Structures are given as structure tokens and as C-alpha cells.
Length: 309
View 1: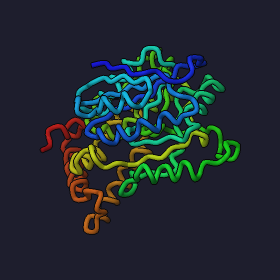
View 2: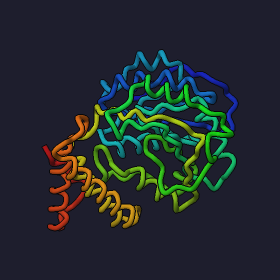
View 3: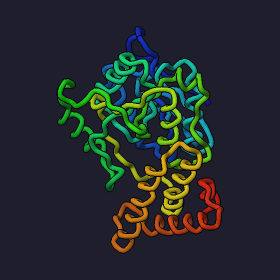
View 4: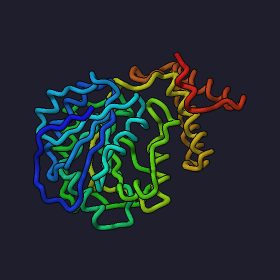
């Protein structure tokens, strides 16, 4: 399905900027986010939403936003949905993938465009997350606005312009689409559902063709909304299976994968008997053990989670 709504903003652009949002099961969150995208000093030329179900999108909210929005549909899975967006953005110069619970400072797109224009070697950039609800119970939009509106510094004091980084953070990572098209790059659909570490995998593909940078001038807040996420058992399995798969694929170093696996194993074990209310530690621990058993038996694969109840 394809849906367009009213265009807004200047017609004169040095680059054509699209925002891509993959969403599933978070209709209300997506509807609440859209009005804040119109706060950008440099409006996007287009927003492409890829949903897994028609009920994931409130068309009335899209109409009210006043932004250029297209809605695409794909089978559920972050990598599948992001690939659908890649295929659906043939005219974009820069494509910013953002989560449906990420709020940007008003200067974000303006600074992003400037960064890409200033250095043709940059093929991907990611921003600075001032607060991340993924590490806690989650943040509200009010919390995010307090951070963004109360803490925005003059850009000359906001931090380094751009520094090299190993990977973009999936909640906000922008791609130079010329590079994506020239090399036929895509997200790996062998990482199903939540697609954990898909940002690392795609970043390391992009890194073969240019620079990946993190900018102190691209500011945002990740709410870390808990609804619509995968089960603890599946996520725990992915915490082991996905990094092992990426090491074998050579898009993640052994060192980075070892740190990820060890950190998650320790956290899930230590917090098993006193878990945070918002984390299914028991499910994650069981998933970790199941993955380790499959690793020893030579059966480990990210897709195995599709067979879990």
C-alpha cells in the first residue's frame, strides 16, 4: 500500500532527505512521534513508514502531521521492513533510519545534511543520544522534551562535530544512499524479528566503502518504549546467536562479539533473582542457555527463534 499526504517545507534542497521508520505494534507511539518531526528546522523531503500490519498505522494522524508521508507494508521483522524502505527510497540522497520512539533536537536534520555535504568520505553518521530509555523502564515524550528543550546548547559548544565510530546506533543512523545503491547493500534478513545487532552488521558493510562517524551535533533521545518488542526467551537466544553469526560473516570482530556476549550473560545471571520489573531476565537467561547448548551441538542460528513458542 502507498499513501501520500500534504507536502510541507521549502522546495530548494541541496540533498533529498528521507526518514525511514520501521514499526510494528506501536500505533499510538508512532502517532505521538510524528508531530515532533515537524519541529525540524530543515524538514525532511519525505517520511517512509514500513509497517507489518494496517493496524500499526493511524492514517488520520498521518494526515494531521502536514508532512510528506508514504506508508509501505512488509512481513514483520526489522531487517525486512528496513529493506523495504531501502527499496522504496530510489530518489533519496540521504536516508535516516530512526526508531518510532526516537525524538530529535530541532537542529538534527539541518546538521546531518551539513555533515554529509562537508565530507564526501562519510557514508554513514549517527547521533548522540542524550538519554536512552532502553537501559531503564523507558522514557515518556515529556521526559524527552525536557532533555531536548532544556538542555540544548549552542552548537559550537555541543561537542565534537564528528568522530569515527565502529557502528551506527540503529535508533538513529543516516546513510549516503549513493553508496548503498552502488554496492547493493541490504540488511541481513537472517536476523529475524527484532534483528538485534542489525545496525552493527549494516554499519560494517558500509565501513568498507567510507567513513562512519558519530556527531556531537546530532542530538536525540531514545524513549526505549517496551511495547512491541520480542520475548525474553527469543531475545536471550539472539544475544548469543546473533553476534556468533556476525563473527562468522565477518561483519563483527571477535573482540566486539565477546564483549557483547559476556556482558549479557553476566547481567542475566547476576540479575536473575532480583530482576528489573521491565526486563524478563528469566526468559533471557533461558534463551542464553538454549543458545549455548545449540552452539555446542553445532545448531546455533539466529533464525531458530522463529520456532519458539
